[in-house]
Length: 379
Image 1 (tube, rainbow, N blue to C red):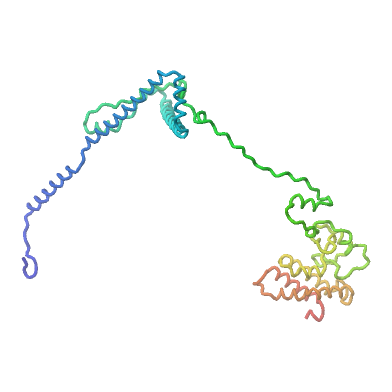
Image 2: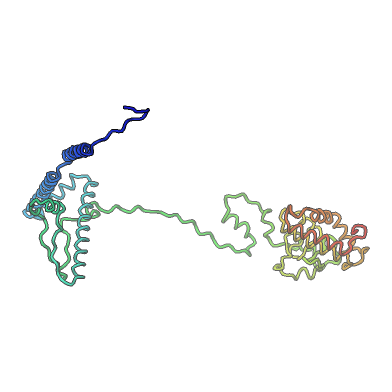
């Protein structure tokens, strides 16, 4: 009922509420007791099934042992041959592996127990651990007997000889026979004959021995052949005069006469496969050609050497400006466009291209102007 829009307070009895709660609890307990499974019968059934399986295995084991004891060695061998011929080899291999695994596991367990007994310093008798089923039955207050065990009490003696496997057990490799290893052939290449670099036909023998399938191109290997006398005549000490385009310089811009160029060893780095390969040094046309190389290191060497030659040429180290040698060198510089190449490289932004090439070209232009150069070009 409502009073002024609100429900009227009703006084309830505490006894009625507690009685209803107790009734509900009693009904719930009864339901739980009815739904819970009986523990004791299930344990008894499992113990009976386990006991029956143990008895059956023990009986089968005893029958097999008695039958083997009655058979002679010839009967055993005959029975083994019949089994081997009637069963598949894969099945025989699995059974023998299983027997070996069970023996290995048993031997490991015996070895561990023997080690524990030796550590204690006394002989110990083996007793099987209590079964979980028996402990559960004792906890429930139900009397039960110990299940029969197929193992007797064992006593360890360190002086006893080790246990040997039965004679009728053989390894898988003995029964099935080890497979014959396949013959593996590793081909070996024939040993090439030793080549003599001093042999005149060294290049031809090199190609026929190591590169017989490639086409032969003697011109590509001509640089490996020693230069003949005609090539070295271009800068021979026996010459009476030289062209300015044939004059050679070292990396510091100093002039190398033919007699000195023939005495410098190749370890100085001044020999190359140009004109007169046995003469050391570079000519101005060779340096101008090298300044346009695609390799930055070659351009740097050419820029640096040309700058030092221009400085010495401008300061009059090679003679006055109207001298035949100086005029011929300036002609080679103009024909090779050396000054245009150096100024273009020095005027380039240092952030683009090779920074070392820019630095050496800038140094070469500075040396040219420092030496004065040609009066009408050094302004």
